[in-house]
Structure formats: C-alpha cells, structure tokens
Image 1 (tube, helix red, strand yellow):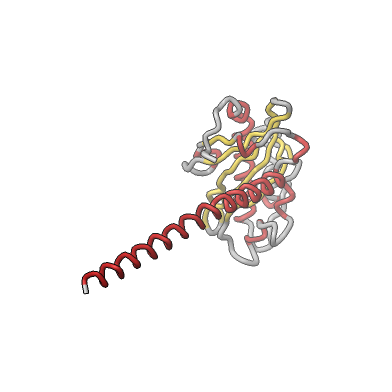
Image 2 (cartoon, helix red, strand yellow):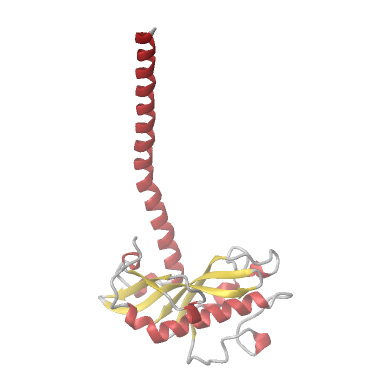
Length: 209
C-alpha cells in the first residue's frame, strides 16, 4: 500500500511541477507581447497629441513624473513625455486631471509646445453622462479636436473658456459643466507647461517604463 501511495504522490508532484512550469513559461512568453502592445498603444496616443514631425527622440523613453495639484488637478503624480528635435526641447505630452467634471474627475493627455500652444488633447478616462457630457470622447464627437493649434497667450487669456462664459470653445446642449471642466483643465495644463515645461527636460526619466 505504502509504495503505491508513494508512487501516486510522486506522480501528482510531477504533474504539479509540469503545470506550474507551463504557467510560468506561458507568462514569460506573453509578458513581452503584452508589454509591446501597451507600448504601441502609448505611441498611437502620443502621435495624436504630438505631431511626429516635431521630434526625433523617443518620448516614451524620456518620461518624468510631475506633481502640481493646483495646475494639474490632482496630488497624484502625472506622467510627462518629453519631445526633442536633434536634442533640443520642443514640446511635451503631459497627463493632467480636470477635477470638476459633472460626474467626477476627467483624465486628460495634453500635447503642448513650451510656449503654450496646444498641439492636441485626448480624454484618457471619464464618467460623464452618456448622450450629454460624453461628447468629450473622440469616439462620440470631434469636439476635443477644437483644442488643436490653440495658443494660450498668457495665464489670464479670457478666450480659454466656453462660449457661454465669453470664451472660444463650444459647450454642449444641456451640458455646460463637462466642457467647462475640460477647457479649464487644458488651460491650467498649458499654464503649467509655460512655467515649468523647460525645467522638466533637465530631469532624469523616472516613470519606470
């Protein structure tokens, strides 16, 4: 009886080791593929807010963490991807938060020159009302494209508001809070870039990517 039980135990242990080994191998094989897919998705997003003809470095490899609750909308660190042309700083893509959306915080990615020109904006995450506030999502409407090539002339530029508030950006029918939050969030991000963007290029990459 004991030898038989011992054989069964050894057999089960071998099968267990094979199963664990298979899982480890599969994870190793798929981890690189998942990482590459994630990197490609990040590149696609960056190209939407940073025209590729403006730079010739790899912003994904020059990523720094930044924190400014007042201008970037949250005490949580945000990522800033630095774009250089022949080694010279030209622009960056920076994550920020519009904290006062109708249904909570709205996460943004803003591409900008160091002088305060918006090169493009995308919404990374939101919880706005379907059919109303969700028009900030490019899959729903092209409203977010209105930020492309808009310049912030100074910190108090009155044009950076929705039309209802005297600015140059359309609001949505029945939903002013959401676009107002996004416009304010982008404006504050550009203010941050105007004042701090150049200094970011002296930092060592620290996003852990």
